[in-house]
Image (tube, rainbow, N blue to C red; front, side):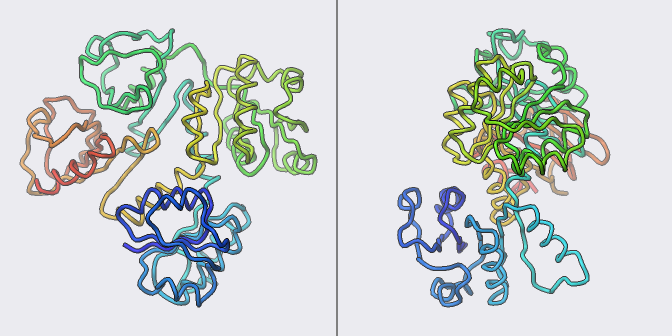
Length: 447
């Protein structure tokens, strides 16, 4: 597959790095030199504008499968996509960072003014980041949350600390609620699928899947040291800070927003009903003390600078905040932030790039979620009519994978080894990224 990317920023580098091994990648940018990350990849780099017809013709746009505009300029991305659409019928992806542009493009697509050819996918990474932070906030202590089967099943990820009741116990010796499975453990930044004899160690991040009801019981029985989140401080009042505050107001959380720019504070006050807006620097320790930020259940730092987010987060930790969530722009910083004590570090580009891969690259694969920065994948697999009914324990899977959920008609089943897999079942399977293709091929051959 041939993919042309307009823009040579951090987002473009991440997309190219993820896709270049199995695809032909061309990057267009106005700069005469490509950035250091792109130089390490086997890709073609062309200087020019993504909306220049001559430049697009020179890279063979008519033979291209996907065009991705992800420069730092919304308007340039939109014009580039519309130019490409007028030249060819390939799929287009447009990254935007302003709410007005998202709303305008959505209005055109759904209104009487909609034209026959429009941008296929408009991605707003800030919105995806907001949704992910909000999901994590709804479950105290969880570092990742995903919902499946219309909310009837979930994935929760927790970090093991000194107070965890099953610290240093083997999986088989833990009395977890029925309909609860441990599907993965991340230890020293490496994800693996455990067995019953796997011992749960300090600082492990443990991934559970099961029915929503059973995981609620799990949270109450084993992760009770923090009650429901009630007080949240948000550092940074940009688009993410505002959207997050608006969502949290709907669930009646008490919110403070610290924003350095006075004019933006006025805008925040006009758009929020209950939140306390504070004009100040979130990296000012005296201000954090004065505003009693240490009494917050959670602090979320979402400024547009990684260094600022790290400093604000570390100061919040020093004040005793039990949970700190931090936005990172550079994907490589996420691991670093967690190493120095930040509870959750989320890349704003990761979810958007997963969307591209799932919707446009792996179109025959339904990837419901990715965890631990892509090390683990949750797959949805439809069992064909020719599949021979058998118990899970008898399936000769080619590699490690856990069938965590079976959707059978209107039922959601959390299976055991003796549970049968039948034709027409929908399976939700957890496995590692490197084993995903083997698992998919197994069920395809079995159909």
